[in-house]
Image (cartoon, rainbow, N blue to C red; front, side, top):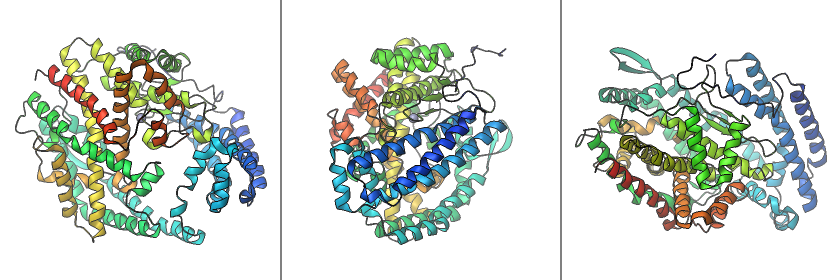
Length: 597
Ligand SMILES: [Zn+2]
């Protein structure tokens, strides 16, 4: 059957826990039932939310959750079926049909949250304090968080309409310009025109001159388009400044902090703690330069160079065994849960033509178990991805005790089990591998992942803060934004990495600054939080395990700071983040030893 190399099996998920087949009549039945429920919900509550007693409100919130559970099951199924075979016409049409139905459903239900948000303060306080509503306090609090920054209804309507030709149009222009860019690169003696993603991928090539050509092409083409793109940055930064003023925000990062249920202060404490450790990054790249024979001439286009060209292979059974064993050493329950994904066929692992690339874990809703998709080809990275996604899987699985409104973790907590799974795997792998070069490369992978998610993202956030501040003082030229970029890069990399003049264009190619303002800090938060939790595990041993599982089981039922406080952790304290850096220091020490330093 299969033209197997070292992978004999086709690991596919079974979606029949959700529906029997693509044409299952239960799919339409569920959509119809949810629509009828929403109709009756609207009949009972539209225009009446302000009069609800605490007991009535509990009933309404439960009804809202029930409609979600019924109405979103078809969407979960259709999305997963589509991901497994994106080229299949039947799946495409099912997904678009179901999407439309769920959009209608949410439009029908939206009045409820709008009315809740608009309650007079005294009414809201009364509900908020009511013992009946204790399980929904966090949800109410989240809904209300933006109330002090919300304008009157006609103003909000006007702003929403103007946004279509304002900020949304500018970020759409950015996407349209950047996605049409093509980058000329000479590969194997042939001149090719590549996409952004293809060009970036070449920066991990073992061929140094190819890495350099790819980097130069990337930034040359971006700089050729800098007039339009920098105009977009200037306009969006100014738009944000105007918005901050209208909505009475104290600082540019506050709306993001509020949406992520953190205080701006926590983000600042985190960023400062990371900046204090920029030296670790410089130390790592000095060693990497020596290993690559580039001492004294290690340049920015060498940062992503691979240390070795020969990678170990892990067939699927080995990968699965390594991940399950590493989870099992932490806690047998964690291994058993991850094991269910394989036994019950909740995982789609084999690459197939037409299957979605990359990897994800879909938590769906608490009434249905999670699913995992990966594209396993036996590389070291694939084993880590398996541990990462199964970490998410365990997280969702444990959080299924929560109601739908308290189920999904907030952004800063979303990676709390996935990266932890990777840390557990790396420990197991380093013991398992006897080849010192492979052990060194595993450590290098862990350290480079940490640099990419903690340090580089902190540096991006610092640039973003300074760029917003710079724009607030008047329109800035691309050169001025570029100068800020080089200053922040210089602080991070010190003299360990040398830059070429074109490298100053890095900022203009990062879509987060346009589409997900101030989002980058959250990668740093999530990754370092995992290190801090792992440090606590090393200190406290088995006593930590039930506390950690409890944290996962709490899903999104409370603010990150409160959930962490239950574990005796305080992200407002620099010492908390410093605990996380101990893990990185240990990895670096081990790496140095393995590298013969
Ligand atoms: Zn993840």
